[in-house]
Image (cartoon, rainbow, N blue to C red; front, side, top):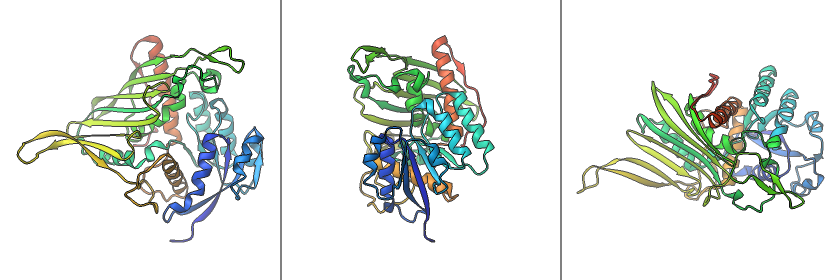
Length: 391
Protein backbone atom coordinates (compact mmCIF):
# COMPACT_ATOMS: atom_id res chain seq x y z
CA UNK A 1 0.00 0.00 0.00
CA UNK A 2 1.27 3.50 -0.85
CA UNK A 3 2.02 5.99 1.91
CA UNK A 4 -1.14 7.60 3.32
CA UNK A 5 -2.01 11.04 1.98
CA UNK A 6 -1.94 13.87 4.51
CA UNK A 7 -5.18 15.80 4.91
CA UNK A 8 -5.25 19.00 6.97
CA UNK A 9 -8.28 19.36 9.23
CA UNK A 10 -9.83 22.41 10.90
CA UNK A 11 -12.38 22.34 13.71
CA UNK A 12 -15.03 25.04 14.10
CA UNK A 13 -16.41 24.85 17.63
CA UNK A 14 -13.89 23.90 20.30
CA UNK A 15 -16.39 22.48 22.78
CA UNK A 16 -17.18 18.90 23.81
CA UNK A 17 -17.37 17.35 20.35
CA UNK A 18 -14.55 19.46 18.94
CA UNK A 19 -12.23 18.12 21.63
CA UNK A 20 -13.49 14.57 21.06
CA UNK A 21 -12.72 14.81 17.34
CA UNK A 22 -9.27 16.24 18.08
CA UNK A 23 -8.55 13.33 20.42
CA UNK A 24 -9.68 10.81 17.78
CA UNK A 25 -7.32 12.27 15.21
CA UNK A 26 -4.43 11.84 17.66
CA UNK A 27 -5.30 8.13 17.86
CA UNK A 28 -5.10 7.68 14.09
CA UNK A 29 -2.11 5.23 14.20
CA UNK A 30 -4.52 2.69 15.76
CA UNK A 31 -6.03 2.23 12.26
CA UNK A 32 -4.43 -0.37 10.01
CA UNK A 33 -3.44 0.67 6.45
CA UNK A 34 -5.77 3.65 6.20
CA UNK A 35 -5.20 5.65 2.98
CA UNK A 36 -5.30 9.04 4.73
CA UNK A 37 -3.37 10.64 7.58
CA UNK A 38 -5.31 13.60 9.02
CA UNK A 39 -3.50 16.48 10.75
CA UNK A 40 -5.45 18.87 12.94
CA UNK A 41 -3.92 22.23 12.06
CA UNK A 42 -6.56 24.85 12.93
CA UNK A 43 -9.29 25.58 15.46
CA UNK A 44 -11.97 28.27 15.45
CA UNK A 45 -14.13 29.31 18.39
CA UNK A 46 -15.78 32.60 19.27
CA UNK A 47 -14.45 32.15 22.81
CA UNK A 48 -10.62 32.34 22.81
CA UNK A 49 -10.54 30.51 26.15
CA UNK A 50 -11.45 27.34 24.23
CA UNK A 51 -8.03 27.35 22.56
CA UNK A 52 -6.20 26.48 25.80
CA UNK A 53 -7.09 22.79 25.60
CA UNK A 54 -5.78 22.55 22.02
CA UNK A 55 -2.36 23.91 22.98
CA UNK A 56 -1.31 20.35 23.85
CA UNK A 57 -1.69 19.31 20.19
CA UNK A 58 1.51 20.39 18.48
CA UNK A 59 0.08 20.23 14.94
CA UNK A 60 -2.38 23.05 15.73
CA UNK A 61 -0.71 26.18 14.38
CA UNK A 62 -3.78 28.36 13.73
CA UNK A 63 -6.45 29.56 16.18
CA UNK A 64 -9.05 32.10 15.07
CA UNK A 65 -12.34 33.52 16.28
CA UNK A 66 -13.76 34.09 12.77
CA UNK A 67 -14.39 30.97 10.70
CA UNK A 68 -13.95 32.94 7.46
CA UNK A 69 -10.22 33.01 8.21
CA UNK A 70 -10.15 29.22 7.85
CA UNK A 71 -12.13 29.21 4.61
CA UNK A 72 -9.55 31.42 2.90
CA UNK A 73 -6.67 29.24 4.09
CA UNK A 74 -5.62 27.10 1.13
CA UNK A 75 -3.77 24.65 3.37
CA UNK A 76 -6.99 23.39 4.97
CA UNK A 77 -8.69 20.47 3.23
CA UNK A 78 -11.46 19.36 5.61
CA UNK A 79 -13.59 21.28 8.11
CA UNK A 80 -15.54 19.76 11.00
CA UNK A 81 -18.24 22.10 12.34
CA UNK A 82 -19.99 21.72 15.70
CA UNK A 83 -22.05 24.84 16.45
CA UNK A 84 -25.63 25.72 17.40
CA UNK A 85 -28.32 24.53 15.02
CA UNK A 86 -29.34 28.06 14.02
CA UNK A 87 -25.80 28.66 12.73
CA UNK A 88 -25.59 25.53 10.56
CA UNK A 89 -26.98 26.88 7.31
CA UNK A 90 -24.64 29.84 6.94
CA UNK A 91 -21.49 28.08 8.10
CA UNK A 92 -22.14 24.93 6.06
CA UNK A 93 -23.00 26.83 2.87
CA UNK A 94 -19.95 29.09 3.23
CA UNK A 95 -17.66 26.10 3.85
CA UNK A 96 -18.98 24.19 0.83
CA UNK A 97 -18.75 27.19 -1.49
CA UNK A 98 -15.17 27.77 -0.29
CA UNK A 99 -14.29 24.36 -1.73
CA UNK A 100 -13.65 22.63 1.60
CA UNK A 101 -14.82 19.13 2.43
CA UNK A 102 -17.22 19.15 5.36
CA UNK A 103 -18.14 16.81 8.18
CA UNK A 104 -21.24 18.52 9.51
CA UNK A 105 -23.08 18.01 12.77
CA UNK A 106 -26.72 17.01 12.94
CA UNK A 107 -29.43 18.10 12.40
CA UNK A 108 -27.86 19.60 9.25
CA UNK A 109 -29.70 22.90 9.60
CA UNK A 110 -32.23 24.15 12.10
CA UNK A 111 -35.14 23.12 9.87
CA UNK A 112 -36.06 21.73 6.48
CA UNK A 113 -35.54 25.01 4.63
CA UNK A 114 -32.02 25.30 6.04
CA UNK A 115 -31.14 21.70 5.12
CA UNK A 116 -32.40 22.21 1.58
CA UNK A 117 -30.30 25.38 1.24
CA UNK A 118 -27.22 23.33 2.14
CA UNK A 119 -28.22 20.65 -0.39
CA UNK A 120 -28.46 23.33 -3.09
CA UNK A 121 -24.97 24.56 -2.23
CA UNK A 122 -23.64 21.01 -2.59
CA UNK A 123 -25.36 20.58 -5.97
CA UNK A 124 -23.97 23.89 -7.20
CA UNK A 125 -20.39 23.33 -6.03
CA UNK A 126 -18.14 21.12 -8.13
CA UNK A 127 -16.34 18.42 -6.20
CA UNK A 128 -17.85 19.13 -2.79
CA UNK A 129 -17.72 16.21 -0.35
CA UNK A 130 -20.09 16.45 2.61
CA UNK A 131 -21.17 13.95 5.24
CA UNK A 132 -22.96 14.28 8.57
CA UNK A 133 -21.76 13.12 11.97
CA UNK A 134 -23.52 10.09 13.48
CA UNK A 135 -21.07 7.91 15.35
CA UNK A 136 -23.22 5.37 17.25
CA UNK A 137 -23.74 2.96 14.31
CA UNK A 138 -19.95 2.51 14.20
CA UNK A 139 -19.96 0.46 17.41
CA UNK A 140 -18.93 -3.11 16.47
CA UNK A 141 -22.18 -4.44 17.91
CA UNK A 142 -24.20 -2.04 15.79
CA UNK A 143 -22.25 -3.08 12.71
CA UNK A 144 -22.95 -6.74 13.52
CA UNK A 145 -26.67 -6.01 13.84
CA UNK A 146 -26.74 -4.10 10.55
CA UNK A 147 -24.88 -6.91 8.77
CA UNK A 148 -27.30 -9.50 10.17
CA UNK A 149 -30.28 -7.54 8.83
CA UNK A 150 -28.60 -7.00 5.45
CA UNK A 151 -27.91 -10.74 5.14
CA UNK A 152 -31.65 -11.40 4.83
CA UNK A 153 -31.60 -13.71 7.86
CA UNK A 154 -34.67 -12.02 9.37
CA UNK A 155 -36.90 -12.91 6.44
CA UNK A 156 -39.94 -10.67 6.09
CA UNK A 157 -39.57 -7.81 8.57
CA UNK A 158 -42.33 -7.58 11.19
CA UNK A 159 -41.25 -4.53 13.18
CA UNK A 160 -38.30 -2.21 13.85
CA UNK A 161 -37.32 -0.01 16.80
CA UNK A 162 -34.47 2.51 16.91
CA UNK A 163 -33.77 4.87 19.80
CA UNK A 164 -31.35 7.39 21.28
CA UNK A 165 -31.93 7.89 24.99
CA UNK A 166 -30.51 10.41 27.50
CA UNK A 167 -31.31 11.09 31.14
CA UNK A 168 -29.29 14.30 31.39
CA UNK A 169 -32.36 16.50 31.81
CA UNK A 170 -33.79 14.63 34.81
CA UNK A 171 -32.11 17.28 36.96
CA UNK A 172 -34.78 19.98 37.23
CA UNK A 173 -32.19 22.43 38.55
CA UNK A 174 -30.09 22.12 35.39
CA UNK A 175 -29.86 25.58 33.86
CA UNK A 176 -31.43 26.51 30.54
CA UNK A 177 -29.17 26.48 27.50
CA UNK A 178 -29.57 26.81 23.74
CA UNK A 179 -30.79 23.22 23.29
CA UNK A 180 -33.87 24.11 25.35
CA UNK A 181 -34.80 27.14 23.24
CA UNK A 182 -36.51 26.74 19.87
CA UNK A 183 -34.91 29.89 18.42
CA UNK A 184 -31.53 28.16 18.62
CA UNK A 185 -32.38 24.43 18.59
CA UNK A 186 -35.36 24.49 16.24
CA UNK A 187 -39.07 23.73 16.53
CA UNK A 188 -38.33 19.99 16.30
CA UNK A 189 -36.52 20.16 19.66
CA UNK A 190 -35.12 16.81 20.74
CA UNK A 191 -35.65 15.40 17.24
CA UNK A 192 -33.19 17.99 15.93
CA UNK A 193 -30.83 17.36 18.83
CA UNK A 194 -30.74 13.54 18.79
CA UNK A 195 -32.79 12.43 15.81
CA UNK A 196 -30.19 11.59 13.15
CA UNK A 197 -28.52 9.15 15.55
CA UNK A 198 -31.73 7.13 15.66
CA UNK A 199 -32.66 7.56 11.97
CA UNK A 200 -29.25 6.89 10.36
CA UNK A 201 -29.55 3.08 10.29
CA UNK A 202 -33.25 2.79 9.34
CA UNK A 203 -32.77 5.21 6.46
CA UNK A 204 -29.56 3.49 5.32
CA UNK A 205 -31.43 0.16 5.27
CA UNK A 206 -34.13 1.74 3.09
CA UNK A 207 -36.73 1.98 5.84
CA UNK A 208 -37.99 5.51 5.21
CA UNK A 209 -41.51 5.96 6.63
CA UNK A 210 -44.30 6.87 4.23
CA UNK A 211 -46.67 7.93 7.01
CA UNK A 212 -46.45 8.37 10.77
CA UNK A 213 -47.96 9.44 14.06
CA UNK A 214 -46.06 11.04 16.93
CA UNK A 215 -46.06 11.65 20.66
CA UNK A 216 -44.09 14.76 21.67
CA UNK A 217 -43.56 15.77 25.31
CA UNK A 218 -42.56 19.12 26.83
CA UNK A 219 -41.85 17.62 30.25
CA UNK A 220 -39.90 20.46 31.91
CA UNK A 221 -41.34 23.75 30.63
CA UNK A 222 -39.15 26.01 32.81
CA UNK A 223 -35.50 25.92 33.87
CA UNK A 224 -33.30 28.35 35.82
CA UNK A 225 -31.76 31.15 33.79
CA UNK A 226 -28.36 32.73 34.46
CA UNK A 227 -29.98 34.85 37.19
CA UNK A 228 -31.64 31.83 38.78
CA UNK A 229 -35.11 32.89 37.68
CA UNK A 230 -37.29 30.44 35.72
CA UNK A 231 -37.09 30.75 31.93
CA UNK A 232 -39.32 29.09 29.37
CA UNK A 233 -38.01 25.90 27.73
CA UNK A 234 -39.99 25.76 24.51
CA UNK A 235 -38.46 22.65 22.92
CA UNK A 236 -39.74 19.07 23.02
CA UNK A 237 -37.87 16.98 25.61
CA UNK A 238 -38.99 13.55 24.34
CA UNK A 239 -40.31 12.40 20.98
CA UNK A 240 -41.67 9.04 19.83
CA UNK A 241 -42.42 8.59 16.14
CA UNK A 242 -44.51 5.60 15.09
CA UNK A 243 -44.25 5.18 11.33
CA UNK A 244 -44.74 2.65 8.59
CA UNK A 245 -42.40 1.86 5.71
CA UNK A 246 -43.07 -0.22 2.63
CA UNK A 247 -41.28 -3.53 2.11
CA UNK A 248 -42.32 -5.40 -1.02
CA UNK A 249 -45.82 -3.97 -0.84
CA UNK A 250 -46.26 -4.71 2.88
CA UNK A 251 -46.37 -1.95 5.49
CA UNK A 252 -43.95 -2.51 8.37
CA UNK A 253 -44.18 -0.57 11.66
CA UNK A 254 -41.14 1.48 12.67
CA UNK A 255 -40.80 3.08 16.10
CA UNK A 256 -38.11 5.76 16.58
CA UNK A 257 -37.51 7.30 20.00
CA UNK A 258 -35.41 10.35 20.86
CA UNK A 259 -35.50 11.30 24.53
CA UNK A 260 -33.56 13.69 26.75
CA UNK A 261 -35.51 12.47 29.79
CA UNK A 262 -35.29 8.67 29.82
CA UNK A 263 -34.83 7.51 33.43
CA UNK A 264 -32.16 4.85 33.77
CA UNK A 265 -30.37 5.75 30.53
CA UNK A 266 -27.00 7.49 30.45
CA UNK A 267 -26.46 7.90 26.72
CA UNK A 268 -27.86 4.82 24.99
CA UNK A 269 -28.29 4.02 21.29
CA UNK A 270 -30.58 1.06 20.69
CA UNK A 271 -31.65 -0.86 17.60
CA UNK A 272 -33.94 -3.87 17.19
CA UNK A 273 -35.40 -5.54 14.12
CA UNK A 274 -37.70 -8.57 14.17
CA UNK A 275 -38.70 -10.75 11.21
CA UNK A 276 -40.53 -13.98 10.56
CA UNK A 277 -37.25 -15.90 10.41
CA UNK A 278 -35.17 -14.13 13.03
CA UNK A 279 -34.30 -10.98 14.88
CA UNK A 280 -31.43 -8.90 16.19
CA UNK A 281 -30.96 -6.21 18.82
CA UNK A 282 -28.12 -4.13 20.23
CA UNK A 283 -27.72 -1.38 22.81
CA UNK A 284 -24.64 0.67 23.63
CA UNK A 285 -25.66 0.20 27.27
CA UNK A 286 -24.28 -3.35 26.79
CA UNK A 287 -21.58 -2.62 24.21
CA UNK A 288 -20.09 -6.13 24.00
CA UNK A 289 -23.39 -7.96 23.52
CA UNK A 290 -25.46 -8.51 20.40
CA UNK A 291 -28.63 -10.58 20.72
CA UNK A 292 -29.78 -12.74 17.82
CA UNK A 293 -33.18 -14.44 17.68
CA UNK A 294 -33.94 -17.65 15.86
CA UNK A 295 -35.46 -21.11 16.04
CA UNK A 296 -33.07 -23.72 17.46
CA UNK A 297 -33.26 -27.46 18.15
CA UNK A 298 -31.45 -28.22 21.44
CA UNK A 299 -30.73 -31.90 21.95
CA UNK A 300 -33.47 -33.60 23.93
CA UNK A 301 -35.72 -30.55 23.92
CA UNK A 302 -36.97 -30.17 20.38
CA UNK A 303 -37.60 -27.04 18.34
CA UNK A 304 -37.75 -23.83 20.37
CA UNK A 305 -37.50 -20.08 19.96
CA UNK A 306 -34.38 -18.53 21.44
CA UNK A 307 -32.64 -15.19 21.96
CA UNK A 308 -28.92 -15.93 21.92
CA UNK A 309 -26.19 -13.59 23.13
CA UNK A 310 -23.03 -13.03 21.10
CA UNK A 311 -19.98 -11.24 22.51
CA UNK A 312 -18.44 -8.85 20.00
CA UNK A 313 -14.92 -7.44 20.14
CA UNK A 314 -13.22 -4.26 19.01
CA UNK A 315 -13.32 -4.47 15.21
CA UNK A 316 -15.71 -2.25 13.28
CA UNK A 317 -15.69 -0.65 9.82
CA UNK A 318 -11.92 -0.15 9.55
CA UNK A 319 -9.43 -2.63 11.10
CA UNK A 320 -7.36 -1.47 14.06
CA UNK A 321 -4.34 -2.68 15.98
CA UNK A 322 -6.57 -3.26 19.02
CA UNK A 323 -6.95 -6.92 19.93
CA UNK A 324 -10.19 -8.37 18.60
CA UNK A 325 -11.18 -9.66 22.04
CA UNK A 326 -11.25 -6.21 23.63
CA UNK A 327 -14.38 -4.12 23.95
CA UNK A 328 -15.10 -0.90 22.06
CA UNK A 329 -16.36 2.47 23.34
CA UNK A 330 -17.56 5.90 22.26
CA UNK A 331 -14.09 7.22 21.38
CA UNK A 332 -13.54 4.17 19.19
CA UNK A 333 -16.83 4.86 17.38
CA UNK A 334 -15.70 8.46 16.72
CA UNK A 335 -12.42 7.17 15.30
CA UNK A 336 -14.27 4.71 13.06
CA UNK A 337 -16.64 7.41 11.83
CA UNK A 338 -13.69 9.60 10.82
CA UNK A 339 -11.97 6.63 9.20
CA UNK A 340 -15.09 6.03 7.10
CA UNK A 341 -15.46 9.74 6.28
CA UNK A 342 -11.90 10.21 5.03
CA UNK A 343 -11.79 6.86 3.21
CA UNK A 344 -15.01 7.68 1.36
CA UNK A 345 -13.63 11.14 0.54
CA UNK A 346 -10.74 9.33 -1.16
CA UNK A 347 -13.16 7.00 -2.98
CA UNK A 348 -11.73 4.03 -1.06
CA UNK A 349 -14.48 3.10 1.39
CA UNK A 350 -15.70 0.24 -0.79
CA UNK A 351 -18.76 -1.54 0.57
CA UNK A 352 -18.04 -0.56 4.17
CA UNK A 353 -20.69 1.31 6.18
CA UNK A 354 -20.41 5.07 5.65
CA UNK A 355 -21.31 8.29 7.43
CA UNK A 356 -24.78 9.76 7.12
CA UNK A 357 -25.26 11.50 3.78
CA UNK A 358 -26.64 15.01 3.30
CA UNK A 359 -29.71 13.45 1.66
CA UNK A 360 -30.33 11.23 4.67
CA UNK A 361 -29.94 14.18 7.03
CA UNK A 362 -32.33 16.27 4.93
CA UNK A 363 -34.82 13.39 4.94
CA UNK A 364 -34.99 13.56 8.73
CA UNK A 365 -36.31 17.11 8.49
CA UNK A 366 -39.20 15.93 6.32
CA UNK A 367 -39.89 13.30 8.98
CA UNK A 368 -39.73 15.90 11.78
CA UNK A 369 -42.14 18.18 9.90
CA UNK A 370 -44.61 15.31 9.58
CA UNK A 371 -44.13 14.41 13.26
CA UNK A 372 -44.85 18.01 14.34
CA UNK A 373 -47.96 18.10 12.15
CA UNK A 374 -49.14 14.70 13.42
CA UNK A 375 -48.76 15.74 17.05
CA UNK A 376 -50.63 18.97 16.54
CA UNK A 377 -53.48 17.36 14.60
CA UNK A 378 -53.72 13.96 16.34
CA UNK A 379 -53.80 12.22 12.97
CA UNK A 380 -51.59 10.13 10.75
CA UNK A 381 -49.41 12.29 8.50
CA UNK A 382 -47.89 11.36 5.16
CA UNK A 383 -44.13 11.87 4.84
CA UNK A 384 -43.00 13.60 1.67
CA UNK A 385 -40.64 11.38 -0.32
CA UNK A 386 -37.53 12.80 -1.91
CA UNK A 387 -36.25 9.80 -3.83
CA UNK A 388 -32.66 10.43 -2.74
CA UNK A 389 -32.14 7.94 0.09
CA UNK A 390 -29.36 5.37 -0.22
CA UNK A 391 -30.43 1.77 0.35
